Length: 470
Image 1 (spheres, helix red, strand yellow):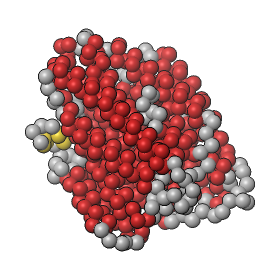
Image 2 (cartoon, rainbow, N blue to C red; image 1 turned 120 degrees about the vertical axis):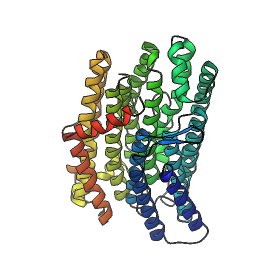
Image 3 (cartoon, one colour; image 1 turned 180 degrees about the vertical axis):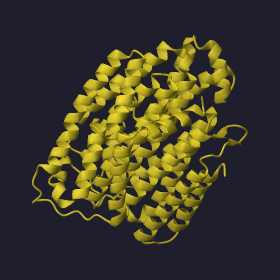
Image 4 (tube, rainbow, N blue to C red; image 1 turned 60 degrees about the horizontal axis):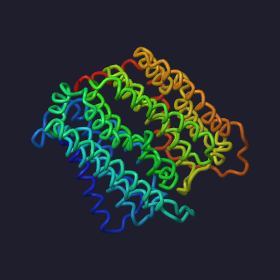
């Protein structure tokens, strides 16, 4: 039971490996993917109350890790459902595509359970290299040839971030004589005033900054978002960020004793991420690039919760990243459905969407309104809680700058909504929407609204999750 979600993903990878040995229809592969993702989600839910250690204490099963595994399994299932028959992926590689997706999710699940530096590194690399391979598998029939450049940039930036992280891990080992996080926590409590401690923590955080697309490890985002297939971009924009927040919480809570120096570092990264992301998003014409820059800004908002060095702040960050994933999935569901041939979707392609596909238009509007921080959606509640927590810790300047960024973001989000509802659709073709896509759209809308209107239950779960590792 302890390793059940991971074993399920390993089995899924083996099944798709068998599929890759022969020729199978897209329908069969898609149905198998949905079924296996649903089984993985069920296995993750079944194992939520499990606790224990594996691999000589390097792998810990607790409420913290299991909740994040459920979130990742759920996000993956949603992506697989609205990805339909993978129109953006070369048909002969679709089975292999799902192999690497399963291995990436496996690596991310291992990452949130890893409590030892080397196991963290192995899990991070497993999840990363699988995605590096998914990016260049995009079909070129619709004219896009940017996937190879995107894959190379993704790989090179990833390797650079990994180098920083390994350097920081070597410092932690040198300072404490151990690679186990619990031992490191105990040893750092007595030497946290040393500059080497802050440097080592900052270098280790670089690897997770890269996953979360935080400044200054964000440069891969626009090109990878645009160059990868719509389905791959949806996966990258949602699932790895859940694991990145989990590991940031682990390490920031570990380093909370370093005080003002680390807080200042996180505050600078948060401010630069918000301004760079929002100002760059203002001029984008491609919807995926806009969401990519938006993701950089939202990563800065997540840091507001971590800066408090309190359980409440960490819980709010978990609540916010969960809401962000739901908002992002709502937007990418529309992208994948409207761009049915797998091509990139320009913002102007959404003209008159309210007439061509009313439910998709509503889904996109809810997602964008929530991203903009407009009530009563989860984005507003999450931002309000993050700003309130930062204000309680006397980060007044940071709160003011975050509020300014919220105002900037409203402009480009609402410009997309205006195009969706206030323009003519005569030159645009109809949009075919399947039953499963409609069902997911409705569920995303309902969840985004409920999390925004009644957040307390979700915040309590997030607090219990965080408390399990404190």
